Amino acid sequence: MTTYLTASEAIGVLPDASSDTLFVIGFPTRAADPITPAVLAFPSADITTLHTPAMGKHVHDQLPAGSNADLLIVVVGNGQDNQQPLPHRAAIAALETALRPAGHTVVGCYWTPHTQPGAILRDYREPHRISAILPTTTPLDLTPPLRIVADAALPWGLPFTERGESIPTRLGRFARAVLPLLVRCDDHTHHLVELAIDEAGRGEFPDDENGFAITCALRDNALYGPRLLPPFDLDLRRVEQLWMALYRGNADRKIRAKLAALISASALRRRARHFAAYALAHAAGAPGGDALSVLLQQRIAGAALDRKLERLAARIAASDS
Image 1 (tube, rainbow, N blue to C red):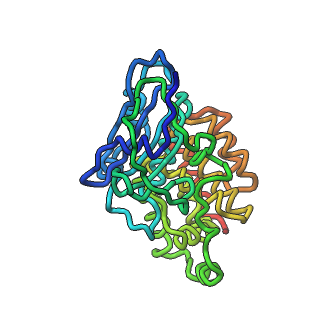
Image 2: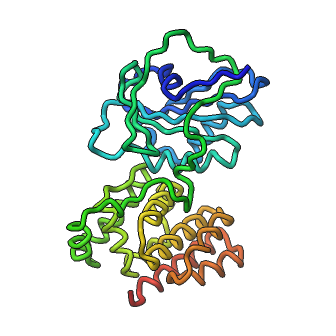
Image 3: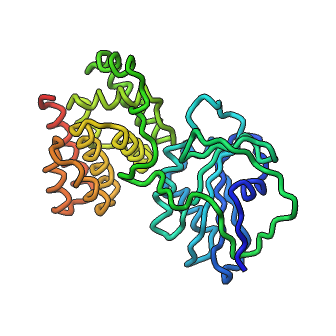
């Protein structure tokens, strides 16, 4: 007989963390799976250096071989200011995207200051939805199979979906009018874009104002071109989540095409050719889009691909905006 748990009940079994910690709870969905829920803990300090594939492998290795599982991702810690965005959004979105092909479904993503009854519970997919962890009146039955009653149907964090972050769209009229005037092709603008990419690589998204400023800055090919060669010292999957968030939140077709091209180039750089082709289909008219299409068709890899991307980036950066 299948046991159905709410997200609140499942989170209530986690220990309180002394420092911000990302927990992944894996629930077997078949009676044949002999294990009780698997719980993995990633301290906040580790998330900034642990790349998405490594996190995904840790999760996958703790689940029954060949088995699908329902997963809850929960960040526990008092370091979160309720007025600020929820932490590690890019890292969580990238992890969800990486786990889906293996057959695992992330049914909910939550933040809470602690796991005791009465604690506030925030939903990453609907940040304005606030609930609380409820006390349980009877001991929970954690014998497989288990199913979580949560938001499994919502594909938050997946590419080119309507849900997820929409960073620029929440700006007020004043910010929309002023920020484009502040964005220039100078050292400050380059620093702004580099900082956003670095934050995304560590698992964070920029705030709305910076997100909007970045999309404005990408109008200039001197900033857009070099982004086609994403640095390997960052987590490219998380950087792609930044581009996806800006893509979903922007109404300008030219900027959306550039963002899709950036996603395609990054995916090509990490050898995810099918995803690169999918993203490129949304990049019609973007500078360098045709060249990226040729690189996909030629199936160039390794150092040769990096050299061609470097030349393409330099050529675009030297062109008129």
